[in-house]
Length: 463
Ligand code: GUN
Ligand code: FE
Image (cartoon, rainbow, N blue to C red; front, side, top):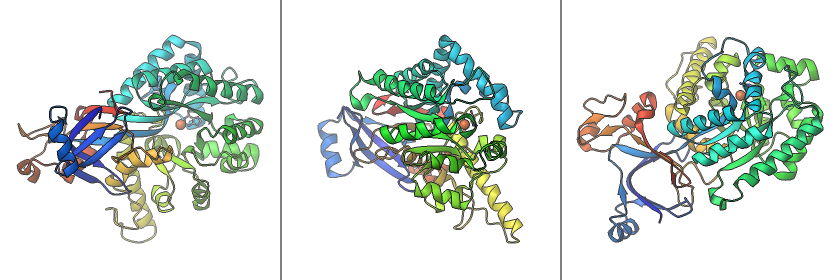
């Protein structure tokens, strides 16, 4: 093995399930995949430990390993103005802020490099090991983005924007044909940019990215649909995001954007659509039938979507859902916040539903409640996100999975002190020197970057 770790593992093998695997041995092979995981007391673990005791790294008892987070929706160029300019509705915001900022990065490669370098650093800091990115229009700028992510060791799916229509005349591609050529060119060059690495070290992949229906002609969407059929490259876009966007499409084309995507074969396995707040039950079924995943971006929805995503209903249908930050429609790059916001919004939905239907609210996450619990959100941010990205061998600690993990430190048992903002008092666990589910819940609520003391992607240590 290339790496041998002994300590507590925490992961979510299924929705709502948080497993604490105390005192386990984890072996990682030279290619960054998990080769062994079992209790340290098991015979196979004991054999290994006795033969390689000096090589085995023991993690402090108040820390645990957790799969890295997946961020399913982030606009890399908008990182530049994250946390500003949230005073407008979506369509005006795009026009006033987003397109301008993106255009400026396409004109200034040095600035792009600086912004993307910092973005990769921040992602590592907040525990995001895999990210699905929207870039800009220009191929070269997206290659800088790909290079920065690969260099930082972050698993990244990079989308060069395809848009042959825009409210900003200087920020669009001149024709559908030109746009398609440019998308093909990016795919080829993005792949070439990592070709020098052996396969398991290639962390970056291109994604076909029609921005959203309002910025794409039918001709372009048709060509991109064909391209995705031909190459089986992932697709991402925005779907049914806001009142304004939905109205725009309906007024212009007479049908909803989901119909437009469907017509052009852009609802399919390997596709992640952001938001989907305006989809009805039947339309959600359509996504399930087409194995299309949703990037749920709860904070951004509060600003731009006018209504919440029906998360419980989507999960009940078996829809593939993960979480996204939607920088800069959302202002926090930390998926911990997306988890908290997803839970908060769902609880409010349950209260409103109950009161409006004349029943007693059951907000505590009982069965049949619209409220989603923290354990469910932890699944969505790790294993759920991996599944949405089609990364079947990722997001949990099993043999054969890629070792994408973060080390979270919550309590120093030796000095009896909590780490960061967690302030534990007289917990059972303090006496037992063992992590409990309460401690993990507290971290989920109140933890921050101070609790993250390690990070690996594909076995490579980033933090
Ligand atoms: N729809 C089309 N483009 C964008 C964007 O940049 N951000 C968000 N939130 N929605 C969009
Ligand atoms: Fe977005």
